[in-house]
Length: 599
Image 1 (cartoon, helix red, strand yellow):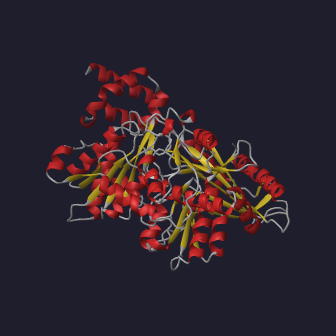
Image 2: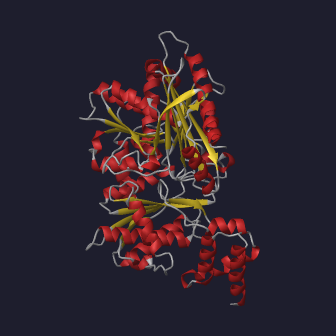
Image 3: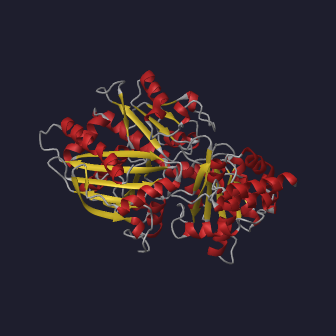
């Protein structure tokens, strides 16, 4: 007790000296003295004794927030870290919210987890906390992919779902995603209602029901092969063409994609799929992925895929991130060094949209009132392609696939969906999987590859043809890493206080501030409040349309600047020269915007 008293005194002294914020002092004392935190007391005491006040201030100075995909961050001690306590609080808050939303019933929650550090333990912990609070639990019997969880929530008629994952984040991270009855991630105001319920139990003991007892009494069930097979059948059924003659390389980047991407490709008839052996088995450390960054948005993560493509003379290579919701794609291109080209998320979205629209139009299988969904920061080439085929596009949605799920649940029939596209390598073609789905994307890209091979065309040639038809669409994504959220908020506040009039010599003609409620929920009509600025610029002799947007990442400690520009390509025009000039100008705009904020 004496040591603990000394730790409390040290915390109070650090607060008085300005080394800890008041919230950090309060939370540290809670973890040092509260009965609900006894299991962590020795570790917290040791951390205080080590006196790393900067780390303690960050770990205890706030409660880890709900972002665009639940709560995600580094594992460790404190309310601003992922640990057994914050996971338990999240599960308890979700349980209290779903029971309040469904009074008089015993709601069901589907729980899944990936192969990260502690994910299995966190999944079991969630199941036991949910069961203790009167929620029926359906727990997957091993690691699964995020889209499998999303599909199963809807297929099981569950009222909510939990996915334990940190997606493509570094190995030291983990997270928890919350899903509603729609099968999509929760949207406002439900996310705030859940976090309110989480905060309400932040000082309490969190009870757990022994999982084995809950299973024996029928208050919990394990999901296995039957649930998997239902998902595989559904996604494989999204096939829209007959060509299958192509050689593919695939890597799950040491994640769980082997549970969804490979079975779907096999069931859809793709037999020649070469798997990167060193990255086939799940590993929480991603030690066989370059820099341990298992993110197919990053070209270096595709290094082993490219190597196997070259070794096997493959037509294309595909990778999924650790929880198998994002997709990476490379394809044969004899005109680039190494013989294969990497495609970014906007380009992948364009390819999938074109192929789905074109193939279904040729086969006469476009549904009534077909729709493509995309976010406000995803390329504007997609709605132009959709319009060409008579397909509507809902293109101003907020960032995050949860908004696609909301629109699908309330405003569309599942069969109306042609594709849902997010520039951050998130693709889906199935209206009953209301999240990003690497298996759905892989199937579309495999069919595209086989179709183009049969026609003697390359993916690059197709993309260039689309640019000639609809204009060259250049896109730039610039990341500003800022571990402290306060620094990100300060940059955005500075832009609001000193709005730019010119960027790169182009006049800012319109500003949309979604923090001010400029954007309305597409379902409810209520303002969607998000820390997001969009600037629409006038063109010049080269460009017709330019858009610059800036927002904090909802899943990582960084800020994102998105730039889009459209340059017409006249008949016989030099596409390569137009591309170079456009890309050069667009690449200068993130720095121009940040300079306005004093960065």
